[in-house]
Image (cartoon, rainbow, N blue to C red; front, top):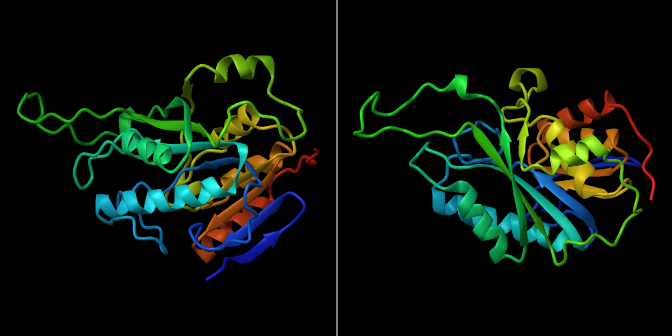
Length: 259
């Protein structure tokens, strides 16, 4: 079933549907894909099973990354926010496995940003406490993997950058330190902060470019796009999350997109 349009404006489009199925988004039309997909750690997403087997999760990941590859321009970029690893349901090297899948479907690896969420205080499990028998090593970070479709040099778009000198110097350092987002404040079980897509947009796109989030959730990527003069497209399978994104956009500041 094709996606249903929930919102269409000059700088934002919200589609309720599955990115793996027809969405109406033109192929080779997207400048940047930035998203944090389900991590398969039993989060209650309402309309998505986040507790499938790991093999099923990898198959799911391959199918949506392949769909996104078709939508990106030849000089399009892809910023994938995923955990370094996971231990729910067994230890798995999520970052390494998803990076390999992205490369297999045609994405070209560029670099990785380590996002330091500073959430070490939330730890509740250490495995074998003060014993070498079975300790758990947990890194309080997430990864933002950066890819391009065919070429890294960006030739399309307005050519207008809005990243400042200080931002460029700070953000080209591959360790980003800022806090995560509150589930309660946003009303979504797994939101990421506006700071994450905003940095990706200002560093990797020109003003006026088109940015897609295939797992839009509460609409954070679209909020960042609107605030930075980009055009945002969000896709989500859950109708209530789509409406939540609409409400957030209604309250977000708008910068006219150019280019």
